[in-house]
Image 1 (cartoon, helix red, strand yellow):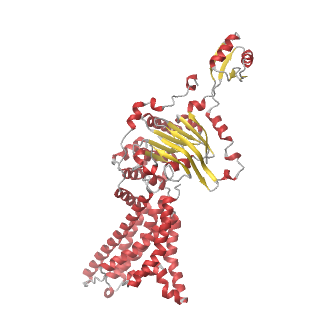
Image 2 (spheres, rainbow over the protein chains, first blue to last red):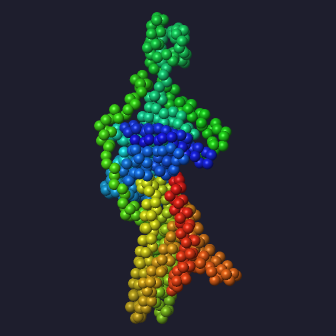
Length: 305
Length: 277
C-alpha cells in the first residue's frame, strides 16, 4: 500500500511535483505514466526519502520511509539500474544488499536465478553489463528482501520484448500474492501491458487516474447495419450523436440498449452491436499531456525538470 | 477488444485476492544493527577493483619502503624510527584516498540510491563509514609497524646489529593520530564534494600545495612564521612526529577545528540533507 497525499516539490520557482495525490493498492500493479521530466522520478525519490518534499506526505505501509526499520525487507526499490558501482560484480552487489538486510547467503543465488542471471553473468563486473542485465540485477536487489511493496522507476527500459513479458509475469505474480507494485514508464505500451491501475502525470500534475479499463473505455457504442445512413439519422432524431466510420459502421454516444431499441423501432437489422473501442491509451495519453508537454511550452518552467 | 472488458473492475482489489492479501500481512522486521552496516561498509571499501588495488598498494609500498630503508640507509644509522618514517610516506598518501573514496564512490557511482534505500538513516551509514575509516587507519599503521619490525629484526640478525627500538608507544600513537587526521581530511573533503575527482584534487591541494604556499608566506612574513602553526593544520600535524608540548597540542586543536571540524559539520549536513539523485 502506497499513499501519496498532496505531494508538492518546488525547486526555486519551478514546481516539479504539483499537489500529487494517489494510492497504489495491494494486489494491484499501478502504472505511473508520463513523459520524461513529468515528475515521476521526483515523486518516487520523495517516496523513498531521498528527496524531501516541499509539502504533502508519502506513506508506505502506513509509515514514512524513514520509519521502516529494515527498508529492504518491506519495500523493494529500483530507481536507476545504472546507479551501481561498475567495479563490483553483480553477485557482489546482491551480496551487499543481502548482508545489509540480514539475509542468508543462499538468497543471493536464489534471487539471481529468479531474475535469470547466470552464474557467469553474476561474476562479471557491472561495468560490462547491458542495460537489460542491469535492470535484472536492479530488480533482483529490489526482490531479494521479499518485500511487500515494489517501487520501480522505468524498470522495462533496455529489456527486449521477451524481457518485458517476463517482467509483466513477475509483477503480476507479485501483485497476485498481495504485493503492491508501483512502476513508472514514459512508454504507453509497457504500462498498457503491465498495469492494472494507471496514474497519468504531466508537468508535475496528475492529469488522469483510474483502472486501465476505465481509462480505456470510450463510453460509446459501435453498431453495424445494412443501412448505416438510416441508423445514423434515427439516432440523431432521438437526440444522440452518430457518425459513420470508414468501415461503414455507426458510432454513437447512446448506450447499447438505446441503440438496439432505436434500430428495432426503425426496423433496421443490426449485424453488430458493441461498446466502441477506446481511442487507445496512446491517444488518451497524448491528449491528456498535450497541453503540459514541454514541446509546446514557451514558459521558462518548460526548460527545467 | 471484447465488450466485457469495458466494465470497470471492482474498486476494492482486496475483494479479488482476499487470501493473498491476508498472507502478506506480517511482522515488522527488526532494525538493522549498526555492526552489520559497518561490516557492509568495510566490505564496500575493498570489493571494487580500485579498492582492492589501493589496499594491495598499501601492503606492497610498505614492503618496498622497508626494503629501500634496508638497502640505502647506513647500517650504523639504521634504527626502527628510520623504518617507521619510510613506510609513513606511502601511508600518508594512500590512506586518505581510501577515506575519500569510502564517501565519494557512493555519489560518483550513484550507488547511494541503493545504499540509502536499504538503510533509511543516512547518518547511520556515514557513521559506519567514519568508524570503518578510523579502524582501517589504525590497522594499517599497526600492520606497517609489524612489517617494519620484522624487516628490521631480519636485517639486524643478518648484519649482527643490536636493534635500536627507538619508537615508543606514545610516538606510534602520535603517528597514528597524524595519519587519522589525514584520513579524516579526506573523509571531510569527500562529504563536501561528493565526487571522487573533486575530493581527491582538493586533498592534494591541501596536502601538497598549501604547505608550499604557507612556507613561502612564512619566509616573507614574520608574523605568519611565528603563528602559522595555529592556522596551518599540515604544520600542526607535522609536530606529531616529534615531542609535543602543551602549546603544540593547543595549536593542533585550533588548526584542526578550522580545517577539519567546521568543514566536516558543513559536509555532514550536506550529506544528510541533500537530494540523492
